[in-house]
Length: 217
Image (cartoon, rainbow, N blue to C red; front, side, top):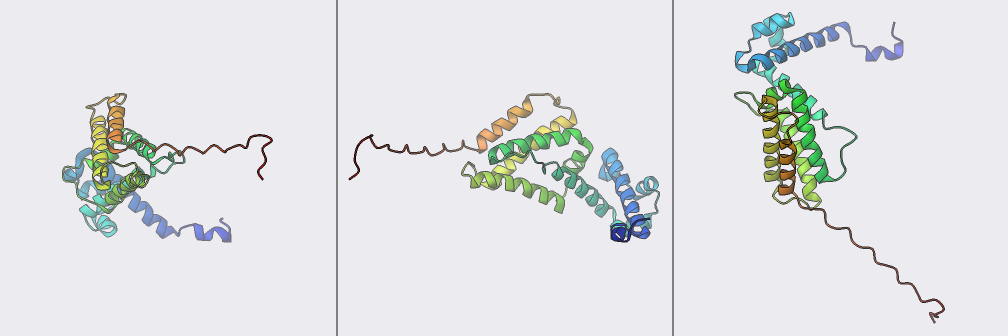
């Protein structure tokens, strides 16, 4: 039996059941979306997999479109978590290069999630998608603030995303092999095109030494 001090951390049975039901619906919808896409998704199939009734789905999510948006939002949350690590480079250009590799690695590790986020037949903007793009824009903005970005921030962000998405989509679809050197070549070419080298550090002035024995009077 939990102690009195831990009672606040234990959700009431009804809240736990509600959360479990919502989770079951989301998991069922995610599996179906990954296999048949949004066009083929039916609330009936979601109910069958989740073990709930249609009114329960509508109670939690409103309609099919809202359910799909919730699934995609969860995918973006996991995707963005992939970039919150302790080994992020301090240099803004190297951070951009690192982000390219992390993006590609996530797509290869989670191809179903990637298809849900970026390869739906009729994609539409979502709050989660816009927030993820804003995170990329902040990375590019940091390069600009360091005085090392060549094109404007908006154009550089779009170009960088086009390059990394193109590489990842080709890898996920099997058109490129995971070990291909093409990914690194595209990454480095994009970095070279968008950024300029760091300015040299200012040379320290050598201290003038007084000749020995000479008076300063």
